[in-house]
Length: 213
Image 1 (tube, one colour):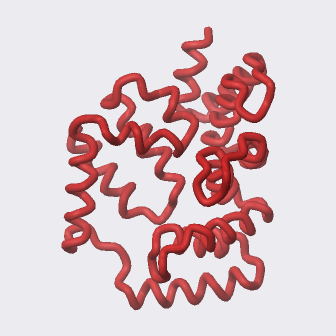
Image 2 (cartoon, rainbow, N blue to C red):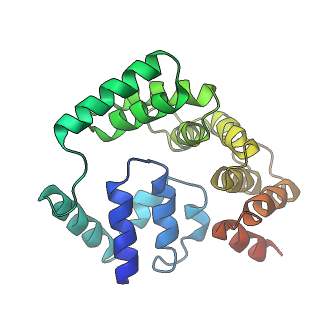
């Protein structure tokens, strides 16, 4: 990988946004052979792609550097203070705080790692219309992580985020229609959603449109 890609991977690993797993795939799409179809749909297949020669070693190197202090996140006491602030707001129904608290549980930052607890907070935020959380809930149902696989439920949440204008979600909706995941296969509908995402500059959507034309 080029240095700029390595720097991007560092940013991904140190980020607190789980949605960046999708963007990790996009950063390496020129490096991973025939990856575009799987990357556009989100999280489920990326672990398989990460076994590509050299890629896994790079991820491990970055993680080891972070653990030795080369790439630092928040100090433990700062994380704890932040969690308490988020929890108070989340308990009062703040969707953004619910999303951030879910993220903390998912990554084990400031609290013990707990995917069930994480999903509960993400779902609360998603119900209130947080597009970031809606995509994570959709990814979970799509991959069978934190919850059983449910393609119909997955598409429902992707669609909610897509209707808010999220390009990644629009591309996921398009891919569902293209593959017939959770819905009857409909290439016309797939093109419509790919075009919406492509019009926002989302590269994988433009790539799919080119292949469909």
